[in-house]
Image (tube, rainbow, N blue to C red; front, side, top):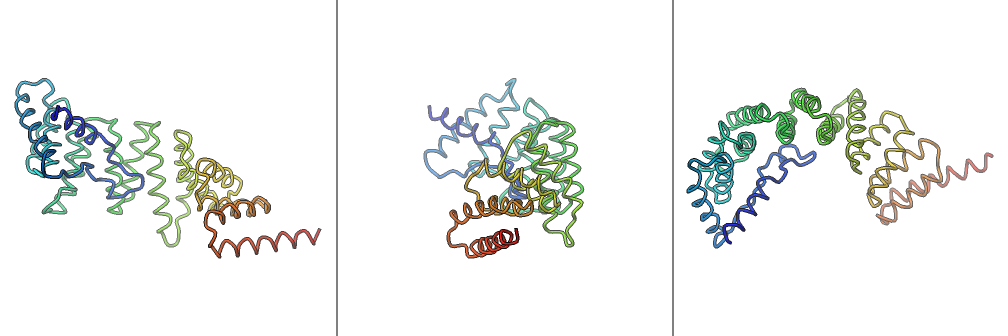
Length: 301
């Protein structure tokens, strides 16, 4: 029973998605919790003994090696974990899984690092994972995230473009590429407005595949900065519908209403934002200015 409990925990942990939207290099973590010493550690040791005993001649040898690597990682046996994943990355039924986790492990392994060699090997192993399984979503995302962290944006875009070509209905590729492009646009001085149509295209596809409030928010902001105010208003309204309590979305939506001269709607939206953050003096000042503008329009009629 103890062995079954640990196998369940490790299985759930091993196959949890390792990619974090927009997480950059932190998204490359091999997400396994450390273990406390004591009974749980003893149970993992029991599982290792069991897996070692059944690995010989097992038709699922790759899966056994993959699980053994996970177990050794949990016990901080990093050399043994790497050894198991290296072995099953070159043969067996779990090659792509082993290759993927080996790559993440190489880059994130605790202890001493040789940074250049680790990065080069990470790239090689992630490319190997993609070659083994061209549908391995996390490998594309992690490799592109790595290139963004290294500020090699052309290479990151090339990875995501390849991924979109091979899996045109995978929403995370469009979302993550747009997130990188949005960050790049925000950093560039002067700002590279040629990125905005690409961001809009990616997020239009992403929201069609899976509606997310954040996707619609960045899409709306991209339209705002492109002076496409009607499209901005529609996207930001959709973002608001999906998350009624997002302050930033309300502020952006009020901007879109003002840009399309829908001043009463802008006022109502600012009132919603102020209800969320009542001490914001800047919002109160915006409302006062907008109220005065609406009064001046009324007097001129």
